[in-house]
Image (cartoon, rainbow, N blue to C red; front, side):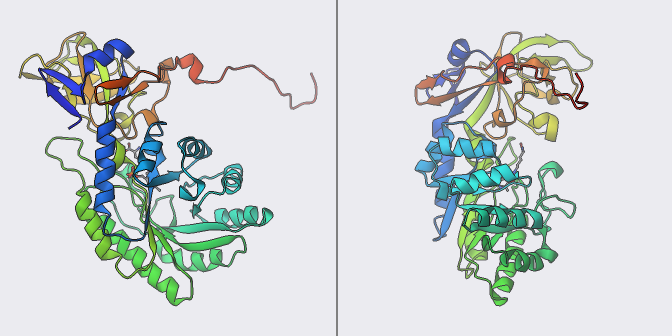
Length: 423
Ligand code: LLP
């Protein structure tokens, strides 16, 4: 266990969190190297029954530069969705052949850059993207290796904002149109279409929607082969959920591996997996300090120095992150709101709930914040970008200092352009 109470103080691996707060200030994301290793190992072990596979870390979950090289050591490549993530993957030492470019709104410039970098494959979202990609590849005298993303029309039974295979989803080609679209794109001269991709959503803890989606993908693989297509790859996406709340279990990764092995038996393809959250969520906490405890009726407001700009998940998805005192004062709990300083009522981490009793100046963490935490941080309210620190055993890295809000944006030099031709 990477986050543990020892002698009444919450530790990350061998380091007491107050030591980190003194050295680096708050708020700060604190990541545990061992937790990342543990999650990567359990994912790799769960998929051991699958012989032909490619593991890709969904960089969007947390692009911190320390993560990619670590995961590469476990055999992971990268699933990217932007030119910025391409840079992150390359800086992390991921070989082009181990990168998959997903994403709904790829620009022509990004597609060109990715082709020029010799990236392994594209997941195509719609017809025009396929046509433009084919033309860009032809212009370079090459063929782009690609999969067609299909919307299997399966409700992932997760939060609506992170479901991606509903009937009104913007992602992929709807299941009933998939075969027709595949024929059309496979005929393009600049594409080497090798199969399908599905991804139905995120924070999925019940495996049955995943199973239903994979079944539909299997039906399509068989139908496309019957039609004469050479199908060599199937990308099963990401989506495995973790436990955010005591009593609410995460996905059973070993059971998922066994289910995948069963469902894909006989597909005779290389399977691709794109986990994000599962690998990094439990490796991070958001360390924060209580600024004030403001009386409220009927419940007080615990005002902390972290805010929705540092961790957006509660404001965006009503997500639950446990609030844990770093030095619990007693076993007593009290019912309170936990809120940040940002000028919006949505800047709240806990609607009244029973939390450890805390007072002004106390440290606390918002737990399970390693995925989609720092990755989604902003400088709203001109707050500094939250800092991120790694702990490995009894050492911690204070190298990544928080960037002042003013520096988080490029220096702005006015450069006016007139449209009238007159000055
Ligand atoms: N592949 C594709 C095509 C995706 O869109 C995603 C996530 C993943 C893989 C990785 O999914 P994961 O294994 O992490 O569930 N910000 C939200 C989650 C957004 C997920 C976006 N796509 C949150 O904080 O809950």
